[in-house]
Image (cartoon, rainbow, N blue to C red):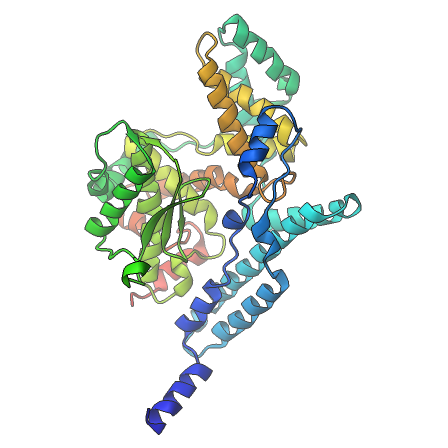
Length: 457
């Protein structure tokens, strides 16, 4: 190598590009979803459902291996370099600063969950207060009036339902677990029929070709789901799927792996399908418009701009990210409904009623069974309701098994916010397309300004 080449190489090492620094930052991405997966989930579920334990006691081994303080120091140091970098426009400095702060906060959130799980009784209250503060700061807080209205509506419907003798006993058990007099309906937002119809038309136009890739079959197993997603990525988006074994180290890939739900790891450009997951036809179509049409597409669109965080998410984008996914599911069939109600009720039962894992599970499976069941006893429905309610309750308490995690109220809050925004722009297709331009919230004035100012690279 020539002397001149050595000098250039040395300068590049001393002066990394913004993209190189940002990639270093991404390597430190805090991942609560991945790290809150327990290693003894099957065993604890069996013990819980058989009544041998009151609440599960999970082992979160991945958290034990994290150097939280070391990661925070690295995040801050890289963040300082990015913000001070001469290639970072002043108009984007705040967006980068908020992105870095979000990484710090999520790292601290995981650290607090880990600390609480391993703390003695004398220390738990202080850690809980810090955890809840960070939880609300990052993921929001349920609204009590909304919670009581949503649950009150379900309870009122169950109270007047004609039931078999066996299910009437289950109803009596439910009302002994929760005081129905504390819950009453309030008027809640709903979009106009015109807005729903317009959104349905836009979603059909944008995602109709993607949906044509879904075969007309009753059930899709994990490999079927993977095949559909891969075909869409290759045919409709021109992706050359990443295949490290064959030397293809760039691009996206779809894997079947140990996970609680279908999810997209944007920083890793990976779509994860849980082992053993099965979807019915309509569920499969929902996943196409939600996972590919929103989570994947908004990342790809954001990656094509000159603001690197746009492919991963601006600060406070999460609610509308999940909300937008729920909205396009509804728009696909042209029917509005409130999304994430069950998650919101779970959050309220914990936050406002002080219920623990077992108490919430016992309420939720009865609520689920009686909300769906029209007649006599159905043992299969009972088993299904209990299994689903355990999974949903576990999802809410994962990380500590005792403290709520408010991430999933984003389905309700985000859906409502997106529908309100759509109501304000109905008929404006260009405004709708702006919502797809990266992972941000077009209803947020700061995000909207950034969306309008970004340039395509």
